[in-house]
Image (cartoon, rainbow, N blue to C red; front, side, top):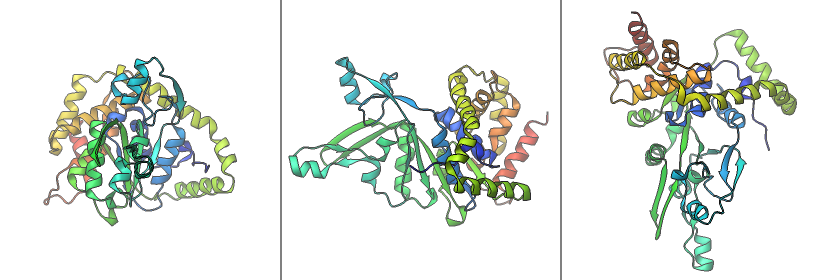
Length: 341
């Protein structure tokens, strides 16, 4: 099995790394979209996160990796097992499933197992990528090139946490609690605004313009390719520390307090930017709370809001023909005005 580049060893790209950490701590954030230059480390960071994540408990033998501690999310087979008192669990890696650009809808949502149907005359459900990704991450490289109907389907499933298949005489409903992670190059096309808004965080990934940073990136990548095992071992302590940070943040996040004053700031910021709906405030609040949990803080402060605001809001802005400033500049300007007092 190929080794992944250590998450802790990634140089720069702090916004993308923080966004992925937030998604790992609080999957309710709604996924992460990373747009930027080719060869800037987007795919490397996603695969590095997969290797970093701690294992999770799952029902033994369940094709959906159901959570043994959450009966509300069990599939029918797990409910039947629980009634018989035969529910057993084991630890498994958090799934990170790649969705190829050429994937069909059947492969994504699942379909009738034709081989079994023809050989035995049985109608059996062949699970798709959504089933494999339950309680984990579904990674889409070049998400801006994915067919619109598939993106719509994925976002609906991500929002509902359930996959419903009604076709070929099958009626299947199974848990599909997934975190979408999409990467892409804006030069190859943009996502529709409706779809952009459904992603929790959107980060801009740029090629480093600092000489020393570029040199360090090259040195680390070269060291990894020459001796993957040795390089991974060199960063093992940092990876263990990051893994512990994620676990600790997950445990304390529900105890982190978001005061009315901070909610007021979040709402004022979204109103000044003219974002539609309330997803902006919700994402900003959840993201700031996750950052506070990562830092071991018990209360969200202004710095937490400021750190997550660009990623939470830049992709929710309406186009303003009278303002040619980029989305990031508009968010930074609104932050300066909102927090000036």
